[in-house]
Image 1 (spheres, rainbow, N blue to C red):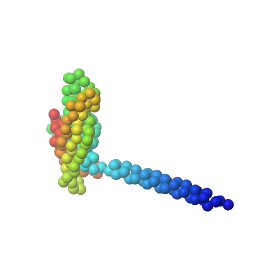
Image 2 (cartoon, rainbow, N blue to C red):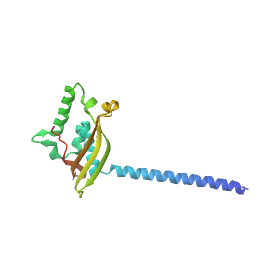
Image 3 (cartoon, one colour):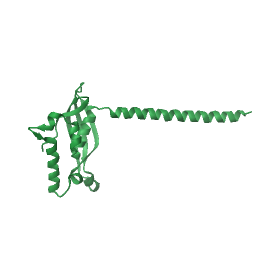
Image 4 (cartoon, helix red, strand yellow):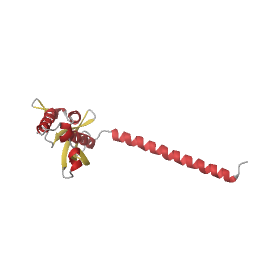
Length: 168
């Protein structure tokens, strides 16, 4: 026969295992819930994706988040011309586009306003830095303050009017 103390010890171990199992299951549940929430497209996510692609000179990333009307103006591929011009400027300085000119956004904050079912306006603020230059110098930090007009096209939010001059 089991003693009372042994039963209490086994019950305590069982309770601990059950509690640990419940905490683990809740953690997995919330992780899956947050992953699905992050996958959902939203105006602020589209604005962040476009801004990050813009400052990294990622042509495919910009085109994925840009309206068709904004991609080609007067028979000119605006995004391609923008990336080409940046590459030429970097080359003139003796650098490649990927090494010297690309920037990354830090401390990104967005505010969505004037949102309806298929249109939104997003205000984005951030700090823009070049990874290579800011490693050696803290002075190369540039503030970013942009407002995007977004439209939902085929279930995906796209930037259709922007304060970023793609043609320069």
